[in-house]
Length: 181
Image (tube, rainbow, N blue to C red; front, side):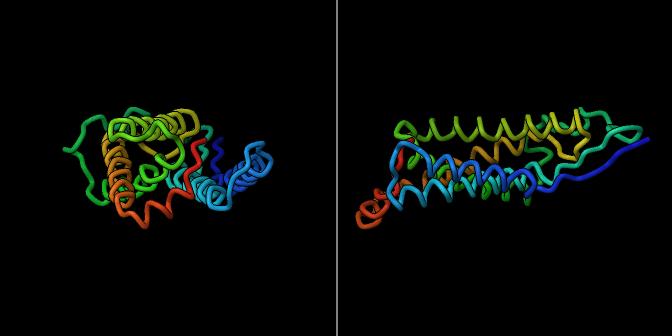
């Protein structure tokens, strides 16, 4: 006997959004409207990233679950197996993370710091995808090219926001959004 079903993203992400919003509203720290807007849009961005990388969550249990060995879904060889479209989409997906980080933490003000965070976040996503593949038979794969593209996207997003900060009028306006949580 086999059981197969899907968990749509909204079953998980709507409660996460509500909990995140409640935590923001009940925080002892007071935020300006600009800072609150930044935090809410960051929460929406993170939820979107989770939606695109982990959902729909396909659960396969029983006879037909994991018929292909899990290691067949791992691509450890960079660049040679590169799919350009996926690579570019991964860069685009992580651009906002690199742009948000300088607003959220004071210590993220170098390309090295941003690259480290981008790589770490991408690694977490890839490990979760691998675990889902192993334990629930999800069809996602783990790809080292995704790590490279996501890290690159985070760096590019950071460099773009740094260029924007060099424009005096925009820097003055953007400083209203800095939260440093």
